[in-house]
Length: 586
Ligand SMILES: *[C@@H]1O[C@H](CO)[C@@H](O)[C@H](O)[C@H]1NC(C)=O
Ligand SMILES: *[C@@H]1O[C@H](CO)[C@@H](O)[C@H](O)[C@H]1NC(C)=O
Ligand SMILES: *[C@@H]1O[C@H](CO)[C@@H](O)[C@H](O)[C@H]1NC(C)=O
Ligand SMILES: *[C@@H]1O[C@H](CO)[C@@H](O)[C@H](O)[C@H]1NC(C)=O
Image (cartoon, rainbow, N blue to C red):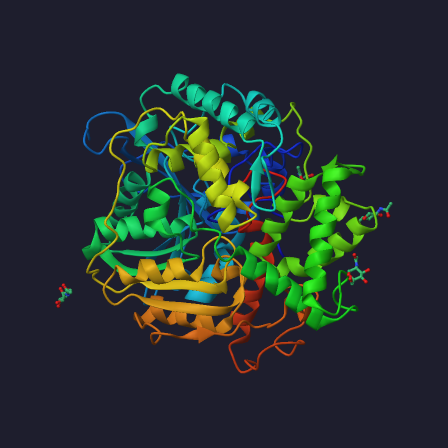
């Protein structure tokens, strides 16, 4: 069964606006969900950072894990200067015979926690890839349990109030953008806060440095070359590594692929070009599934679209109040948009609940929509302060994205022009526009890494994408693959972001064969998902088995692999999610 994890985001382009009305943190429930005997502070505070990898048992109550704090130079050009400590976790190989060393993972963001990823999905990854690998990840420098941490506030309460004061999202309606002034001004303030909390660490929190950290981690494991699987923003990290260290690659999968040049240009412009394609899938799948499976059904997909648009527009006139025993809030136009984009990340897990939530909302009940991607948690001040200390996804996202990107003008007018252009790409432009806004008064950085993203790698990259990814379009995967000799694009004919949200035993078998034997699929390979229409999927990811309705004839496949693929997809809805009523990252 899925662990009830409420992980801060992981997926690539889920952005970081943390200014929604409620449900600010998952920090408070982290200790509850992991329910380890030790608190987070005890777990990590009890480990002294070392230049070798020294592993300590950790999180014993949720599985067999080992943790380490790995010491690296904060500034690689000043190796004797200040250090950073990278928080690592691994699920050790259980097959010692034929041991193959570590595979490193990155969950996306930027700002996503690799420790959280492995706690949630480490076992499933081991099943998919093989027990001869150590399943390893880390909180990248500046993020979560790694220190120093990207942090722009003195306390979490202050961060939370700041987010709450950001005001409404700009409104994008019929391609016209209004109301960016407030977010621009708040972003100016955020840049000042970042500067006033910078004791010299800030400029070193970059993807380029994290790529070098990964090489050091691999070397500390006694390996010369990396094996890596990066999701979403993790594809930027992977492509950066490949550009910097092309001869250090044993295996590299980049999955849910960001257009790295666009990212490093602080544009975030190409991310959303397929978002409407994923939305169209929702309409098509709903119409095909019929009223018994899709509560927001209409016979013609175009009618479903019209119904959805009308419903969203009605919120401009009259927002809907939500109040339950455990949370409350308001469903307005922006929250609707945010939850909708979030649902598009994981059609397999979320299309059905989305359709129910839309039907409920049409009947005046906004609870389902408000809590679509995760049950909202009301912010409480009396939580363990240590648990709060690292719970700064948005700070981490802003830090990495703004440090990595080329400098952005501080002009409000230029931001407005940028946003107007972005709105021509997608009605979800808010999510990307906000990231750029946050960089408009960012402390001046050195020369950001600019590629080029080309290389003759020591093993060809495997580049994975769905055919309808709402935040990392297939065309970005093709673009990034073109830069690296021999790289092959593996597509999954489904919606969702990244591959783990589009469960496909075919794709995961290719990924396994790649890691185990180095074999790449043929150019142009397109895998089917296990379920063509998410409305016709078994009720939960763990039910139904290989013979369930809608499965695409892969019954002969390894049942364990299928179970793992479904387990990942079931959890991925919460792990690899984007915008939600909580903090977001990409
Ligand atoms: C953690 O687990 C213990 C024993 O299983 C239980 O008694 C306790 O209530 C749990 N704590 C939380 C915060 O869930
Ligand atoms: C959706 O559209 C159809 C056709 O226009 C209409 O009959 C139906 O009542 C609408 N449903 C909702 C929930 O708005
Ligand atoms: C609103 O929907 C939720 C499910 O999302 C349900 O639990 C609740 O009972 C509904 N409220 C009313 C008043 O129908
Ligand atoms: C890439 O590297 C391999 C092995 O070093 C070499 O044989 C090949 O010619 C190189 N290809 C290009 C395009 O540089």
